[in-house]
Length: 230
Image (cartoon, rainbow, N blue to C red; front, side, top):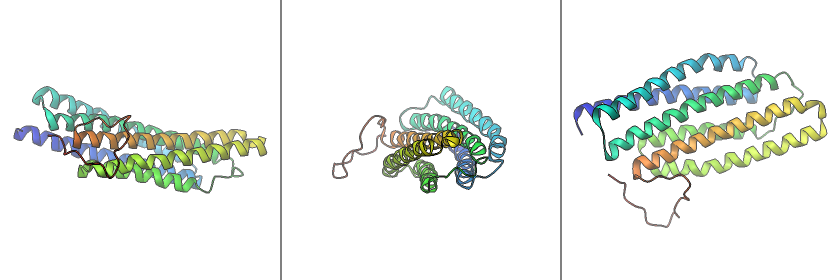
């Protein structure tokens, strides 16, 4: 690898990590604000979105520039591809955080709507998923990335529990149908954040091992591990 390519790849990854820090903060604001029924949350999140979008475009442009100028191969090509895909997932996560804020503003107008007591757990779990996926990227840790994939099952289960609770509210309190549907949407957006964290984790596995992990089951812990691809 040339010195110039290594320099550009390092700078690219630093830009991605700076973007990830901003997105993680948006997730925390959205999830914690939802659980606390914080008023004005949507405006706070929308004010941060343009910077995320600006950075996403710049990172994508840098990826394309590296591909054109350096024509990387093997692991260097995977580094660029992983940054390009993770960058897109981070931008979508920020969009979903804004969506959660919008649903929260509607829910906050109905203080009589009971929020599920496990909503906090779902919020903390998805925040941890995103953080752990990005830590796996920094550490080039495929095993940690696989743990993130498994965490998605918990988010899915909690989302189903929220949906069940929404059905109960609609059945027992018809006057709360509107905010209950906003709760349904907010939970769905949080679940989708978990899906994007899973995408990032799968891209880390691809970066480290050179194999596409999507649509594949993780190997048994007792199975022999393949050495990372070069």
